[in-house]
Length: 197
Image 1 (tube, helix red, strand yellow):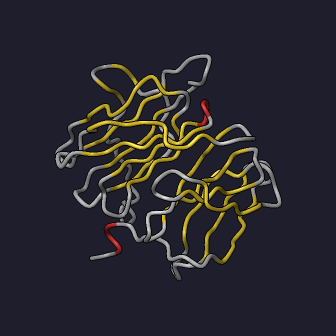
Image 2: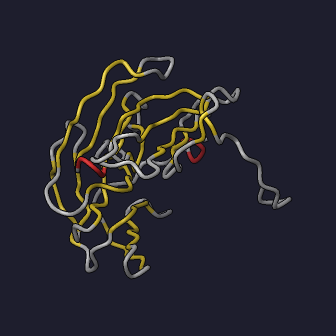
């Protein structure tokens, strides 16, 4: 709480089993908290999962058996869920039902180079900006899963991306040198649900 400075644990287990180690999160317009839980998963041990924490406290497992699920986002219309899977160097896209359950999913994009995709940001057209860890770049992927652009980064450990308040500045974090870069883009960053009220 920003006023009281008190912390509260919202969830630390799923059906009595401790979470592996949550990584990234996203709130939707209905107050659901979506988050990835990769822990130490990878190709050698595909035990990573994705969860949705409902406003009433119910925890639902959306995916399991992933190789380090990392970044997560919903499309601006909230019909699609995107999860970057670092271990398999790919982007997973899921179609959502009205109740926020997954209708079906598939690997929409496989990347080349680096360890794999990390954090995600979206623009208002539904394009994804995906940090490619150890790949010297941010991949720009359209809603159909095609890579339509690349933003080169000076350093290699690209970890996350976010649009600034002006909507046209993309901030890029870099883990090896603990640096934050910024770049102007010609698209407009999508606002989070609480920014549209």
